[in-house]
Length: 258
Image (cartoon, rainbow, N blue to C red; front, side, top):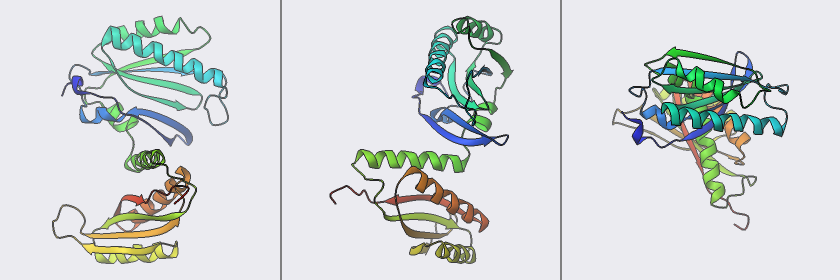
């Protein structure tokens, strides 16, 4: 497929890499295009932070601004000179890494050196590799299913806030799941009940498109990102223990005067 159909869809998620916290920003829309013909080489530029905090992230606003300036200069240079695709970036262990795909082997190093001359206070390294299958993007940068759920959580919360939702007001939050067997569903339902969840609905599908035994449970809660991420993660993990799959959640918008 061609990148001419590409509308960037940037999202951020947090995870651990080598037992250290990492913040990954990735263009999710490229999953539908990858691998892009003629963009078979991946390029990585790693910038060492000057003042990382205990988690390895920038400690000062000044450094955040400097990293943004480096990013803007890199993206402009790589897109204009190479028609490269900027696919993602990572903050991890005191370093900011930028990732691009293009059809060029040597030129990205030259362009990166030109850009980094504008930022003499920063040290950097580069790496280039043949990656016709886009493994770096699909297998490393792209979020795992549980991380994608966290991204979906944040999107839903933002959408509800735009409708005037007051996230701190408790309300019933419903969660949907599917299971391969009725016994697995029953065991999960029992464990969820111990966690304060009540049964909303359960049914069996005959269409064969997904695990047939569905379950909807509910519990009172707020819609802060921390609360929702904690709830979905614990239900996701519990579902996996019982050969089930977590499908998502929903709740009513609650405004201050409701």
